[in-house]
Image (cartoon, rainbow, N blue to C red; front, side, top):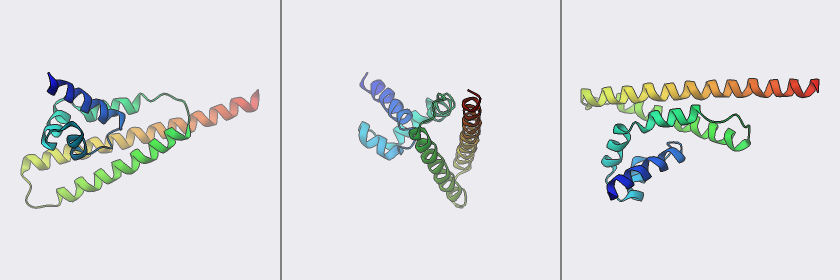
Length: 135
C-alpha cells in the first residue's frame, strides 16, 4: 500500500516539477532506489503524461509561464546533450542505445511541442494587440 502511494506521489512530484527533478533527487525524497524511480517512470509513462500536461497548458500569458518555457527549453536541451554523450560511448548495450534513442526522440517531440506553443502564444499576443487597437 505504501509503495503504491509513494509511486503516485513520485509521479505527482515529477509532473508538478515539469520533469526537472532527477531520478536520484526523487529517490532521495521517496526513500527508494533511483532504479525504482526509473522503472516507475518508464512503466507509468511519466514522460508522455508530462508532454500531455505541457500541451494542455492554458492560454493565459504570464511571465511565470515564459519562465517555465525558458527553463523547460534549457532542461530539454541539457537532457538532449546528456543523451547524445551516452550514445557516443562504446560500452553501451544495444538495449541501452535503443532506450536512449527513444528518449532522444521524445525530447525532440517535446521541443517541437514547446516551439509550437511559443508560436501560438506569439500569434495570440498579436491578435490580442490587434483587437485592442480596433476597440
